[in-house]
Image 1: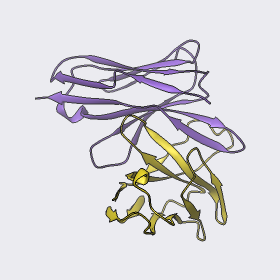
Image 2 (image 1 turned 90 degrees about the vertical axis):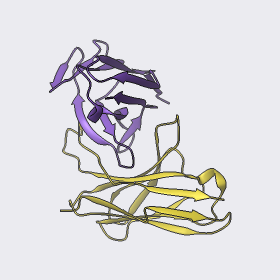
Image 3 (image 1 turned 60 degrees about the horizontal axis):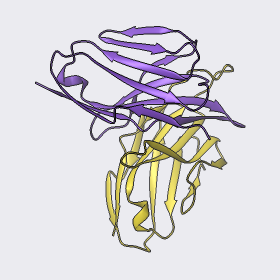
Image 4 (image 1 turned 30 degrees about the vertical axis):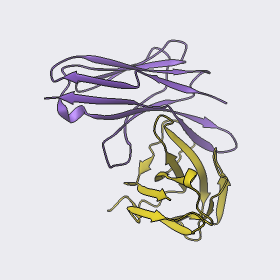
Length: 116
Length: 112
């Protein structure tokens, strides 16, 4: 049981290049999330998914696209990278009971992205 | 938009000392969580508090939820180097679906 895994761990891009970050979870969770973490700003939600084939925008979606073709995978794409997208990206997954209170998010180890 | 502010931003203490970090919200929390994030890893859930005035203990960590559910504190007794990390508070709110909003974090370093 690997939990949540992310690939790659680290990447350097030039401005204008594209790339895809892959997140995979083996806990059969319905919900998956992509966050970015910048110094002094905590975690900010980019996009999220409440199930296979569905995605929605979070707090900072501009410049990113996502896809959830399979329940266990959530992909984050950067079509044309910009230096402002230099950050650490975290994927997370969770399940929800009917109460929706206190459900745990399980995070991956992160992808460190540097855009030059 | 709800804002979660954590204080202090940074804290460096000696092993064995006690400390308290705080999380304050601009609006009432729905359900407050505390996470710890170690360097190079993702956050890991420590505790969830739901009821105003609630106190939960996890070994040397004591979590308090304010009566008005707009603030919370995390107290660590006899800190150890293994407590080093970034402490994040988060609220779970419903806006069509359940989402999380995270605080800015307190970075703790415990020196041996």
